[in-house]
Length: 372
Image (cartoon, rainbow, N blue to C red; front, side):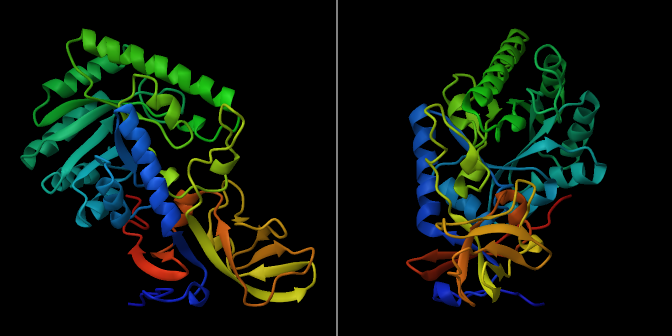
């Protein structure tokens, strides 16, 4: 098997093979610390979303800083992280396929496992599998507070599901999954806050109705990097699921806060490290990070720390850098900020962690390609 590792511990940054994923360890650690401070100040729990990084090592770093566990979107992703030492996982998604339900229950023999539901018959299937493995699965009812994806309507529709979970063998009703995913990347603060304010009220009402039915929502979960301050100070949410804060990406840098500043509490710590591979034209350069090195659903990458050049386009294996002053040299290395960090990470096998210009950590992307 070809490991395809772009560097070794102790490699100088200028000698790292490209394209690769580079982590600035100082910025990365500051991001972890900043989120932990907010969570602690508000008296909340943080269940960090691992779909951002898909790494057992990073999950464990977050948990060492106080996160109670991680979220995953797929059973296979959760399995990979549990195998890597993570012992508290929420699959913050519905699991319907019988084989995946079986694997979910089997995983609960090794770790604390929770899952979301929005269908009453799915509860029976989860209960039967949990009973076969003699495990307890925690279950959250997912409500749709504006994302338009999974989830029952907020309010009364959630109550029968909560009651059925509570009565089902080998299942424990844990609370609500209430994530407004569409709001995360709304750039205007007032528009974004309006969407979350509505989600907060819908969630509050649902919690109250479930309480009147005699059940307690131990967990009221949701929030992402774009809105965590709003949910976190709402008095309704008690478990935040922020993920992208740890790396940040180009699109999150376009999101404004209430005072007009951008979300700058968190720093860019993840980069696509790239090399100028051709410089035959005065006004542009070609680098080795093209479409196969990044996700472009939120736009192409941005060149980090430079305002004299601009990444303007890509084909499969080539990136085009606008270089109007002809400053770039053949072989020059560039840090590119991906447009969207989550799907970009899924392209790579390794993170190369750098401090002081030297490789200090090499971390596998544990759950790369885990989409089952």
